[in-house]
Image (tube, rainbow, N blue to C red; front, side):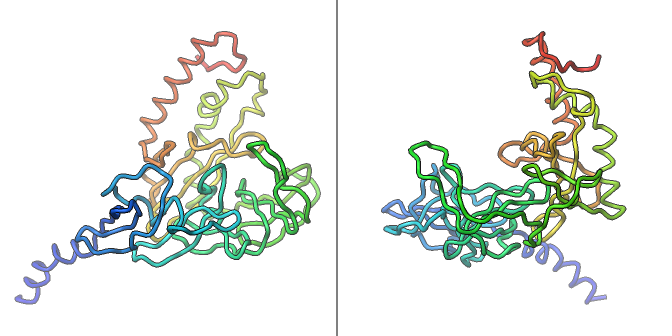
Length: 318
């Protein structure tokens, strides 16, 4: 009886000890940035000159610690931008430099750079694909293009292109995939055809069925602001699970693709709880919104667009 009482008394303490540690950025007198925990213990020393607007005491969000800049007096390496650490203060990787800042996550992974080569990591900083190529594009519909012996085009234009070298296509395992003949189960990438990369178990098929049933409604909302008249077949959207539950992430992420199998962007990306009962949409800052509230907001935006542009070709159903 005494042992049972002791366990009950200890339960609140155990629960508290298992809560995630609160981490905060802090600035030194010379404006260098580091991270402390809620007790003031330094997790990462103040050694980074960051470029984003960061307040002293701002909370660390996400599964890792990100510094939007480099160590003081350090010259960044080619294609690198910033540093990523785990929540215990262990260095993980340097993200790929993209569009004047850190590379974004696409289909659950982000590019990183090591010794001048590009690879991919997940949201926890785990290496998914080793850095072996001179360049790799973000993943889209399960594939990423890569090249070796290529380099950025020399131009004064703000947007540069990667030119030269030998190009290929890789899957989520980092395996090189060869083109195949066109069929109903292939997707097109730069005029060539590759096998559909997605396979699902029964539970995952059930999760996707929720979106399949609402395809017509969601398609109308997405395409209402397209000025080119689209056929009913072209209006069809595709939904794929691009990320599955893992440590620090108890969700399935479902991305939406247009008829060309191109990601529609953050407005139509969703998270589903591990038990499949709760569905959220993601906004531009990765904040979760209930699917019902998101759907209501999308309807209002679509109706407003239609009111302001009465000549648009892709009408909403009455």
